[in-house]
Length: 128
Ligand SMILES: [Zn+2]
Image (cartoon, rainbow, N blue to C red; front, side, top):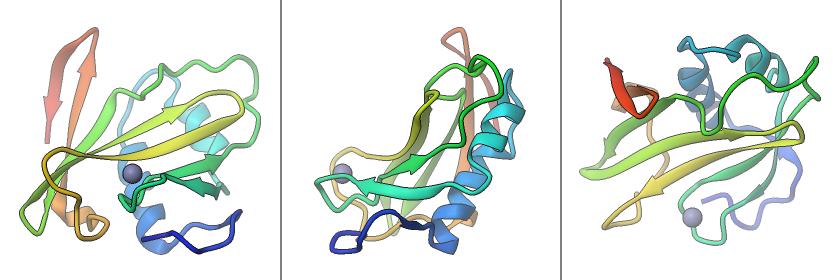
């Protein structure tokens, strides 16, 4: 999907909307993560064409508070193919991972194809 494009590059509108969908949820440290990713750029991609992207971050103000992967995960079907979207973050980089299971998704999900699952201490706490 993103292969062949030079890095770093700006996020596509679709990539940004998937990231913002995850960041629209609330968890401990989310405001710091939002600030770190406010003007993030894609710095690399997965070796397979799943659409996962490595992201630049602005250094956090203080120690990183959020856990990683962040507790809000997106799940959905892209033309019938199940995927999960997980955001990893540390003080130097982040990674938006498109997790696929049996079949590679044909494209990135649109936000209206995603729902979120939120975990806390290993327990599912919210599904919307
Ligand atoms: Zn991949």
